[in-house]
Image 1 (cartoon, one colour):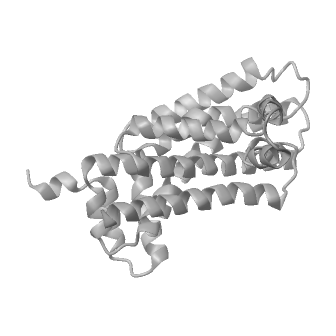
Image 2 (image 1 turned 90 degrees about the vertical axis):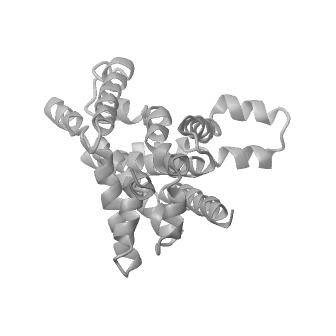
Length: 268
């Protein structure tokens, strides 16, 4: 078997195909298309979707007390998403760059006539679309509340938008940690730790502990990194640009950091 066939990973093939497109957008879309198709080339994608749907249903009906609430809403569904994504999203993102580094195909990617940011954005969009598909498959829950009562569809729509943005923020963090290590396990663990910080930063027990020894400005600064207050706004049906900007900022910063890390590999 030739060395060329060994290095032809799905990502490498995607970038190779993207190189034939002169426009940056064409390159990004080609990479995203090939990466997304790569998810469904193995049973892993289907297993992930099944696990996601089962856990979503379990947290909604068994833990969240869907029927006990006595209201036609999806509060018990969305309230668990920060914790549900804590492990599932890093499981999706841990392979984005760790696999390239482990297989040695990252060198091939970086020598092709496609910029690093195009490859990063393309791979990120493919994974984000995959998560969006998994989230969209929870639509039976919407029909359930429609059957049981008269829910506010605007609130439900905002909840889905906030959930998708939060998943994107977690995924961008996972993309960044994946570029740091050749090991997918290490990438997964570091990503879970960072995402857990984004959840607990504004948690009252944590802020109360910080108040005892930290100045108020530091407490407010740490609490400002929490995803919880921003996601709670979407759960209430409020489309606040500040909340959306928070999640987009996390994505942009994490993907920018990923680019710095990838370029350091090129320099090395």
